[in-house]
Length: 170
Image 1 (tube, rainbow, N blue to C red):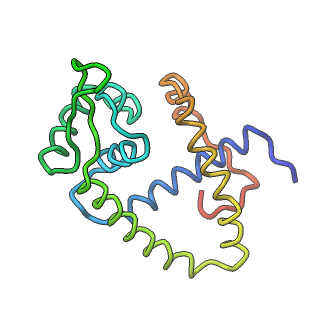
Image 2: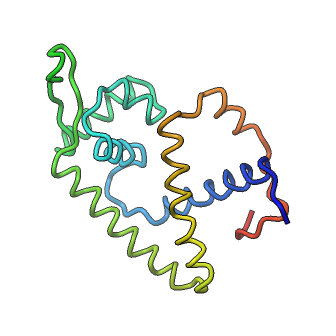
């Protein structure tokens, strides 16, 4: 059975929604919100960044990001530094403690995921392994060309079409 682009998009969107719920349930209680953890991960992956760019990438307002960075700085997870190319610009960067916090969260999640993987069949585990490159490509595609607010609002209004998909509950 061939799947249409619209059905694939709706199925992937619905699966991502379920996976976000799973991700939240697997994340250890560390005092970090998902936005804070995502911001740390962005800084770890992309290097130092301006507050305005971080706010845009994480989908929050600049004042909200400013408050978040202040809390992360107070916790020793990020620090601010002057941009070497422009002394008037301040960039935020992750600290060694921030990297350690992320590593600890990832280790706990990986352990919890391993327990869930044990419940799957060998074919299901192989399918997940085979899907990892595509999942990474999907995540990188969004980073390369972020979805606009209009597209997000449109997607949130759309009713997911999941007929014919075999991925768990819908």
